[in-house]
Length: 440
Image (cartoon, rainbow, N blue to C red; front, top):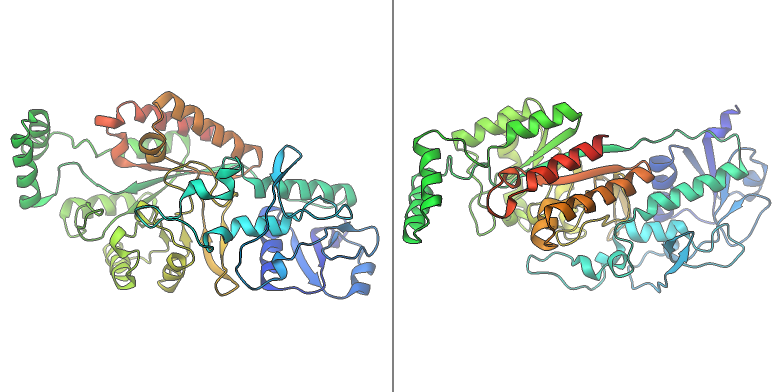
């Protein structure tokens, strides 16, 4: 095998940051090739290894993609997007028939993975979040398709036809089970004031079941229903599921209701879990627009565990492009797991592999790795109102889509949703079915 068979040469008339970013994502991150860019026509013509021409002019018998303008622009402005069907999937940024594909897959992939549309004027929900239902993917029916991975495979197939000796490193399907700890315990560790108030409210409402359950946990040492940590640990071990926990350690507020990190019960469970699993910060609702609060939360968790905190996922999935990511970067976070919607399942960035955040505001690639998830328990139950059986079918569909492109499937669950309490009756079986399907 020629040593150049692993080196892809890309010709374009210029190599702006957007172009370098998306070619690196597709060829280096997804297809595992080395890549080199050139502006030299003669050097490109004389190169014997795999090569791609990304320009208006064909230079020979190379694999030629006619570019649209997006990757050569620097502004952020509304794009003229007209979707059409191509090989059973959606495509856009149509180009003429000189091109290997009838559209520019690099510009289209950049538009989706950079979350370009989230920088444009848009509506937000009551929590200030981008609304899934206004996204291109939702409106045109491809939110459940990892389009970028699909297009990358099509590019790979075209390259293999042109260069049969090219050596690709095959990817394998992977699964990561992630758990957000919004409420460490239902009853334990809440302190005298919160506990007393809760018991009084239960009596006033004549809710004797709630009163008895709380009383038994606090005074008779019964098992706290949100204490599902051992169950999660045992399932992860039995099925070989890599698991990451994200701890909410912010102060009390309307949407932040966890135990204080100073409570002994919470300290113990955080330390215990960090002893056998990877952990990260679950930045509080209140910290989303307050860098000092977020810095304090990261420092508190870091001090407790005596280790740097490098992973995060926003509480309530509060993600505003690009400020949320810029704030995380400034505080040393290296991986973020927020990329997904609360109201819909699927692939928010149309990809099922980690990617580096591209800061459109500053037109640069950052060192923050974005790790997208595809399905959340609260989405299935609280937003979509699915029964456990229908939720299982939806999750299996998403796993199947991810496996079809050898991608990474990430689920988002909460310890409390495995309690079998109230609206979560029957959902521990959904979780078990998901673990089995994702590790089969």
